[in-house]
Length: 88
Image (cartoon, rainbow, N blue to C red):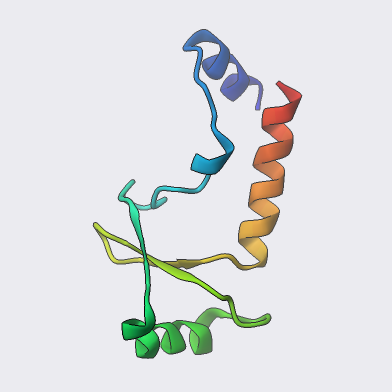
């Protein structure tokens, strides 16, 4: 955390809340919202990975095709990152 804070300060990095988790963690690709035409793909992801209530939206990385959704891990990670940013 200390090192990250130093990098942000030295390079004067501006962090915009709307851009948090807006890139794929595997390949840095951008996301596309999966629409109704992808119902079968979304259902497969839900059955395999979703332990809680069914997410409303799913996104696919346009580069590597990894599927993402706003589950419990997302919310916990987002809260942690926001807390860190506000502590700067």
